[in-house]
Length: 118
Image (cartoon, rainbow, N blue to C red; front, side):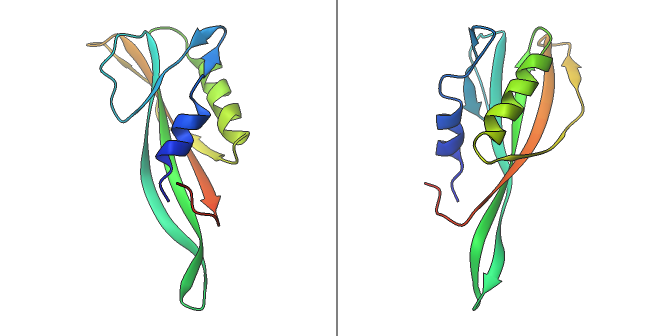
C-alpha cells in the first residue's frame, strides 16, 4: 500500500486558524514557522485466507514542527485523519529543538485497507 498520495491529498489545503500548513514527506527545507512532515514506519499484511492476505495496515507518523503552541494543530491533524479512516495510536514525546527553535510533536496513526491505495 502506498499511503503517500493519500496523505498528500488529505493535507493538500490544510489550515488551522487561517494559517495554511504545508506537509512534506520526511524532510522540509523551507522557512515556514509551522509545517508537517510524515513517514510510514510499518506496512504489513492482515487477515489471511487461502494463503493470501486480504487486508493491509500502514502505520504512519505525522510530525508537527512549530515555533509557537501547536496544541490546536495537533487536534486538527487528529480530526483530519479520523475523517479519512485513520486511527490515532499515540503521540511521541514532545520536544523543543534549541538549534532550530522549533517545538516538535510526533503523532502516530494507522489505517487498514482491503483496497489497493495508489
